[in-house]
Length: 295
Image (cartoon, rainbow, N blue to C red; front, side):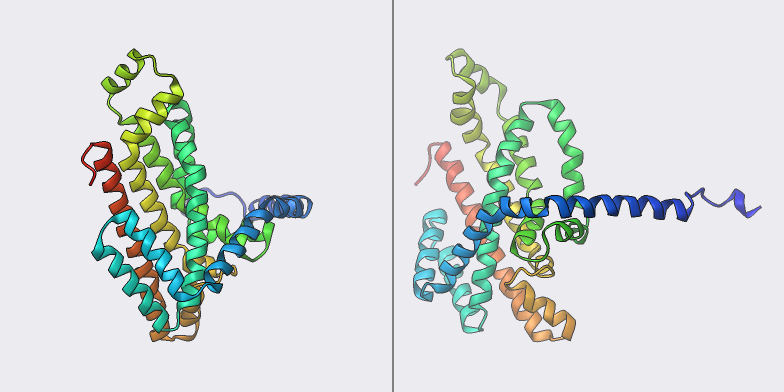
């Protein structure tokens, strides 16, 4: 009578045949189109390598000066600027400067790519309930699927290197900016939109002059979360050859080097805090500017 209590299952042989067929089709696809897809991503790889070499080849004091200037004009906060400079100086003194620059190059490129794709998709979602209903499950899968699962098809298609790592990071980090762009535009006051329509604003003018400025704080929150999620993928991306602070952490896990793992982990945390505080301060400044009370 045990069969009455057992959950019905597909025969293992049938499951193996289905899995074998799917794997075979994907291998055939990767052999046929892998080279073409690599060629499509080649300009991105060239730009990423150029940017990485730019950060590594520039004098450390010049990099600090540029970062400090950008952070100051973004936040207008002495505390944030000074804290960021101290964090980067400590990273350099502890011998992690090169890895930190590689990590920064990857994170900045991934964030720009995620924002460039995510904001237009979020705008499109805000204009169509049907598109929102279609994309929400896709975004749920992108956010909840274990990141290691992403590695399998991407590595099979493109091998190991920077571009597979960038794709994994972008796929994992993009949903917040899409969701919050969509949410921010949908939360714009309806009376404000009616006033814009009454003045004869075109859809493009209404989007760029009314909806996006009013939704900017929410969009900035999405960009902030995208940066944080990209940094969270640093160690995972190191599994497929992305150099940076993630590789020493991975080596520390493998060889049980507690101090090495702790220092590199703290360096990732420091970079995350710098990005977080700077982007939050920039978001508050933009919000005050839209409210007419900027400094």
